[in-house]
Image (tube, rainbow, N blue to C red; front, top):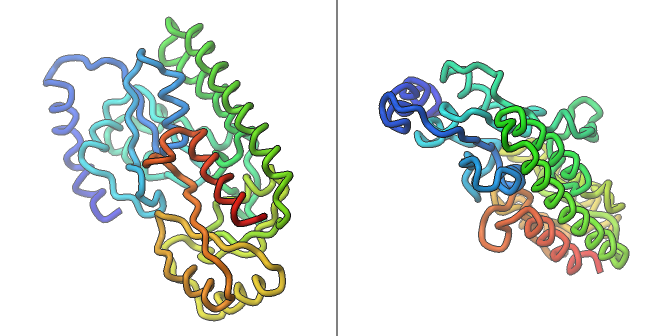
Length: 287
């Protein structure tokens, strides 16, 4: 977040430039991360421009917004965020743009979030459960209808189409998960608890409990021991430094698989493709 201070100072100029001086821009929407963005843009259709703030491949835990992201957030009529502590930088930018928190719509608290294993914090990664994402579609439709009531019936219809696709996705993954003979996994950070709960897997350890903070040697030794005892499959993530996971794989003598929990790049350019990618990797790792 090193660049935020000077970016905030640039907000008025950026917005004026983006809006063409005194002209009133068309209503627009911004979304913090790709999985939400894909659903929002499909519900919005051609009616509203939708801007993705976090570029694919970047880590949401350490994101520095670009000037164009600040401008898009400042001029948007509505900003969708995960909430639950994951993307608080969205709220910070909205406040410093002079629009306050009112236009930031946090989806996570409205889709039955679950506690993290420590029992002290709420896990924000709800999008990795396609059943909860169907709930998210409903709250997104409601928010867009409030922003743009005239298009309400079409938002509702497009939302039903998205929910049907997500239901089919869930049914497919549930069917595939029945063939996974292994049930224990070690994830790079705590991103897969929702997915694991939905499809009856057990996350027995996490390589990097605090994203961006190098795990201690004692912690890594404990993870190696856990993998040896349980036969758990090990996964890294493309947004984070894979070196600790590679060390673990070597020490435990197990393969290292990669799962992308955020998507947006080649092969994960839709929500369904993102979840299918995870299931594809698990098909290989858990047979």
